[in-house]
Image 1: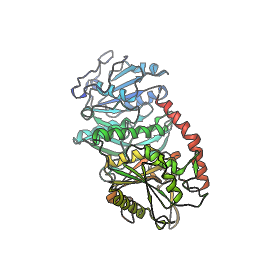
Image 2: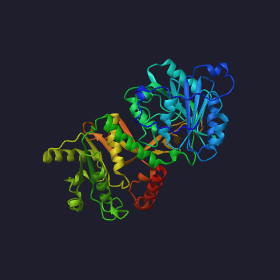
Image 3: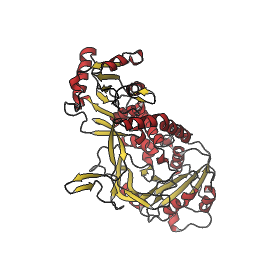
Image 4: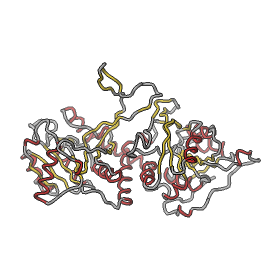
Length: 502
């Protein structure tokens, strides 16, 4: 079947009628085929001919047989069409061929065609455990208050060999701050919930799961099972490799969510750029150069470019920094001359923050609701990261937000008997516990949570930054590395991301 209809955002999902085409097939179906299906599994595929049959066969192997399968060939130019011909006459399978429309449009087409109360996407390069549908459908059937369920999973290579077992924290007992979304694929959702939410947003070309997660949490209850029920393939062509595109899309989703669902009401945020006096030649000196510009220039430029900051202030004990910030280019930034005793080696940042707040209140009658620290030694931080932090604070109503990178290496801490692994074993059957490392680029806290000993509050959200954006300049090598990344790597990375998006 060739499908080229328009299923975009102006479709009225709330009054949707069943638009399912008649199933193709010959001969009489058996009793199993006549049973009303409970779950629609749909597989969108674009040039994944080498994987798609494995995904289809994993649906056929399910111990639960109450399913229907929709395969959407999204404009493939490889051998996908030839492979799918083998399944076009199966009574439980519908194959659609369409000009390339992208993932989220394909998601909405599948939702429109689904004949079942439960819907699940299976990516063409992934495959299911034989009990996946049975376990997740049982959760939705026995827990009427749950609208979405997702499992743990195995990470596999492109040959299907298991690399590691990824376990998600249990909602309610282990995870109460739900800022880590369910996986976009292999998450089973009640169709009525999807319809009430208006389907998938077609504004974005990826991160459909994250956008849906934010909207879903406003109305419905999620649930997860700590059993690995699908195999998530990592290979050179997978979307998860394009970290820059993913993070930029998440930032846009956050911004849109705040604008539409929070009435654009972010807190008044003051950004403070601490600029301590340093001896000339010190790598993190305010005027050390990265890509031909001083560290101070990078901090001010990105802070003033951010859309979510209310004000920007530079807190310094360095007369040279004061003179630099008095230039017309930085007229929107306040300069707070702090006492040198607050800027000494080993001094805590909280007293500087409190001093700055008192100065702004006394001289400008200004009292922010939150404070963000933007240290000079993170020159690769962008306005996008600043806005992501403020939006995260708003969306998840946390006390603080910190910027982190995910540490993928096998890590240890020092115990009584020497080095002890943070993960209990190298055995693949032991879960992968994500380890996040603070990179110091963005620290944001509600004013009410700040005291003289602590800047970060109790309930902490996060934004994820790429490793290449997370360089902290402490040594001459760090400065050299930041300069090379800013001058060469990031421009090339941005060009690749734009090319992928097209």
